[in-house]
Length: 275
Image 1 (spheres, helix red, strand yellow):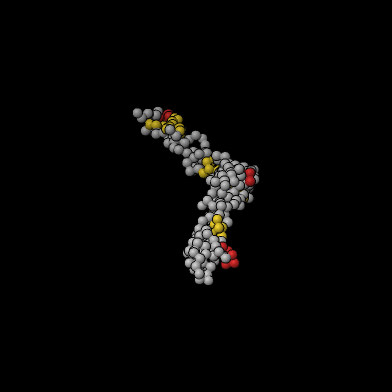
Image 2: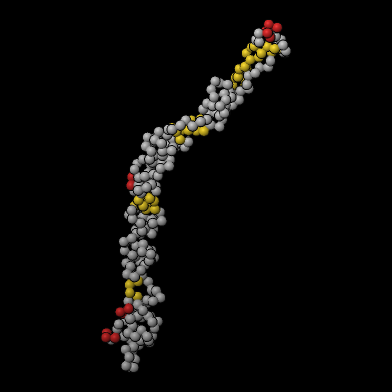
């Protein structure tokens, strides 16, 4: 219902207060007396606070913290470009001593911050919540030694700070089987189809448990005595384990042959003929 104004009220330009309110706030204004009655309330409609230099929500403050369009600034006392704490969302730059990047865990030392490289020094240099993590500057390469034989797996290495090295890591690599503490560099090679000493060879010549094997060019089952090498088993070059052949180019001449009247030492029983 439109209210009327008296002639005196109109003549004296009297007015009354009014307000508009919603979930954003309350804005006040006036209604002016005119010959047509009171005017509509001239109060602004409250809106969310925006970074625009206006008190949008009519709370008496302009562009306060958290206004729409604000930017977060963090205290940066050490001027390393990264601030500390949760920061404040402001409509304007507060000036020196603030940064737009957070995450600093020490705002006194400029060399400590999210942009820093982690160093082996018992300090969280890069503010990631960890101290002296793998690959830190100054780290040394260590190797995982699951079987605790003193030699690590060369394929399972980590660059660690000395203060973070645990007993499961060692300085020397070279283990070719980190599940068996009897297999490692420096141990005797055994005839067991394993590379015991991790030299890349299995059951090589002169391994413990080897047996003499000989050349056998004429394939008669015997080899020259002086051709013997100690092997874990026969191979293509040294296929036999019986010595005493005195002529390895003739398969009819060998220790097991029958001696005949032919001016030849068929059975290789002459000591001066054995080689």
